[in-house]
Amino acid sequence: MQRRRVLAGLAAVAGSLAGCLGGGSAGGAGGPNDSYGDWFDGVDNYDGEVDRTGESETTVLVGADDGLAFEPAAVRLSPGTTVVWEWTGDGGAHNVQAEGGGFESDLVDDEGHTFEHTFSEPSLVRYVCDPHRDLGMRGGVRVVEE
Image 1 (cartoon, rainbow, N blue to C red):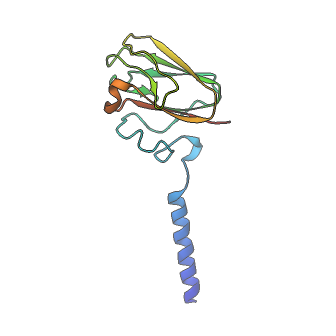
Image 2 (tube, helix red, strand yellow; image 1 turned 90 degrees about the vertical axis):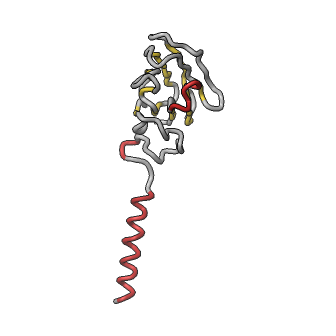
Image 3 (cartoon, helix red, strand yellow; image 1 turned 90 degrees about the horizontal axis):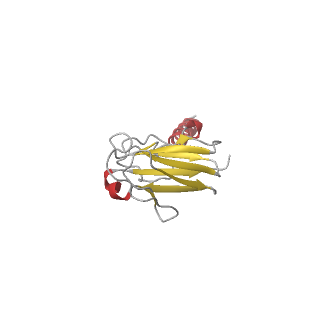
């Protein structure tokens, strides 16, 4: 009888741990443990990835919120999707620059200015406004097969 209680207790603990250590959140949206690591630490408007899979084009605002954010901060896309970054004119001059290379816009402060990049392969791309990197102006794009 004692052995059964111990085994039942161990099974309950294992089940609880599995629930705590499990993968991402429901619906496929990224959460705190979505392999961006600490990239979004200090980014006030990051609340997981916005799912834009299946769209051929999506827009990300540059200079959103207090003028020092990308909106949305992170998106999930299908291969072949073009991201259009559109400047709000707030927060001074901004650029969009992929960490590790891949794409980089000019430094611009004009409202309505746009910069585009098409993501063709599954990947995880972190990007930044270089002058405002330390103020939390960081973003991310995850490209996934549907």
